[in-house]
Length: 284
Image 1 (cartoon, rainbow, N blue to C red):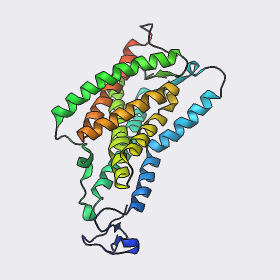
Image 2: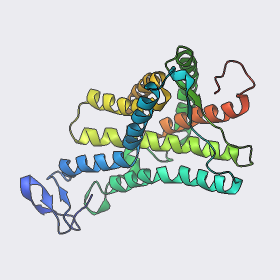
Image 3: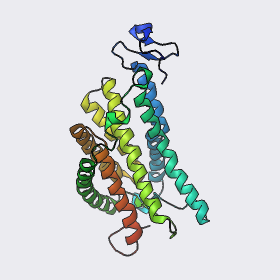
Image 4: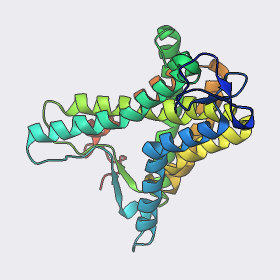
């Protein structure tokens, strides 16, 4: 999104301000809605919107094959090379690259106002100003949603509505658990910053009603988890609704990042420790 170099934009078409570098704002200093819509499409196309398209294609492929959904597996963290150091290199790259859209979001939030005077990530509460609050609320949410989510997954998988989710299939190298933890944190940051904080802020600026924004955010979260099956879609839609309501109550995305990270860490590390050792945990 381009912005003007001057703090006092000139008049442009349709009542918008226009600076010498092509940036445009409305008279109240907010970006032109047309630019916001384009920006939103680009951010989603580079991140979770693209993930949603891939998940739909994957789900369609699976349901059109013989057998039930639980005959197939969804692998989340798998080996990428047959030599450990190259495997580690690929794991780190696969963790780092998806974080680039988060950096883009932070930049765009700074560029909301002329001269880079926007609020940045603090606009959505992605900062370290309230660590005790964020950790405490996040742990409570993780305990509530993580436990119920596991029960729902087991029920959906047993009923044939879900693929068998394989949280990890990494080799037993020294870096296995650090990579799993880093992957969990990456997932939480990307999803909560983009699909909750950024998306809701932009939709509000575009005039969407709170209910419409809640439904779109939750539907997007559910769709990019569709690779897990129908159960994954439903469970993540419900999680999306809860997370949006909590974000609106607290005004901060950090407790949700903490909660999501804890849920994924327990899922990834727990599977690595328990798979094949307990009867109740589905494995391929």
